[in-house]
Length: 416
Ligand code: PMT
Image (cartoon, rainbow, N blue to C red):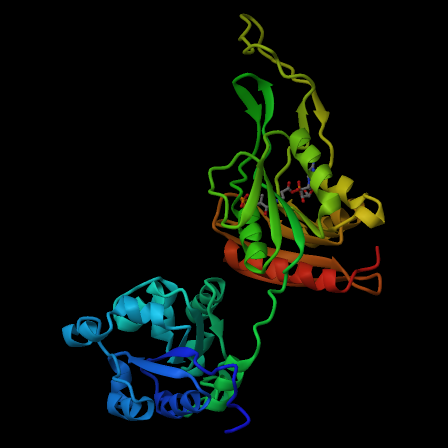
């Protein structure tokens, strides 16, 4: 054990949370290893965990009373739960069951452990442990992704034989592995230091002071991308058309109305960016000139002819910047048929590095919805085009996948 003990953990205040999984028996060894590594350890057990291992065992190993209930006046008189939440440098939950993950992902505070997690601003780490089918279930995967977005670090699970007889991913990491992961110095977020500019929402092209041409873009996809890039440490600027969404935390927003305004903002920001994503649904045409006063109905005339002129192609202009000022350029393609063919054509015609093709004719996906599905196409290093299909999923999840793929392209610049 001496190889794991060291000054880096000395004095670290670890709140060890134990939930109701068979792997709870390993938490006794984990508590012991943490103590040997120089940590101060206090244990909180859920009600179900006590069916697998007794609080007395953990008390004997840590030398501290074990907390099991939120509504325990005697324990609260010693150290109140808010005080305990503030005391911890690290909350480590091992094992973390599917049920506990679901409650934490939903922000619930229905027992002492979940309440402490909500009340604490400490580093948060969990080692999931459950049956392999429970781990693979989309609900658990959704919860795991949400917890990671909320700042939890998930260690494991490992794959192998399970206590229930199944084989697969779901086993809690061994206590030694959990301790070793705690000792690792924190990694810089994947997009730290990168400047990312994203266009989102519709544009509005005025016809007169009260009317405009626009489309159904809600901005949800673009805002989810901004949120995902910021969560990975990027400096994000959102060039947003008119939408009714709040600006994501840590993101700078530039509000515009028309395609020409969006184009000007993009031209200003793109040369300073590492990554430019055009998610906005830009109107291809605008009125040649917007009427100064409200257009009136004319008695006897059954037609009104509007003359439209082409808007600048914002993303193509960014892609055409000289190499020294050109970011990696990711476009979107909103299609209703022949997704791959049209997307390949846009990738080439607009000079993009990557394109996210979404089928906007599919019920419940695309414009306005909280969900989307897409085909990602990107230029590979050898001059070809690689692709990946993203099944229907919440836009927040899809945004993470798109950003990660773009970061991979940035790490290995494609041939342009
Ligand atoms: O906003 P939501 O409700 O969440 O919906 C999301 C979305 C469906 C709008 C989004 O996923 C999407 O597909 N955005 C692109 C819509 C679009 O305008 O696609 P397009 O195929 O017409 O344009 C291709 C690309 O060129 C896009 O990156 C677009 O931003 C860009 N473009 C288009 C015209 C123009 N004048 N300038 C541009 O930069």
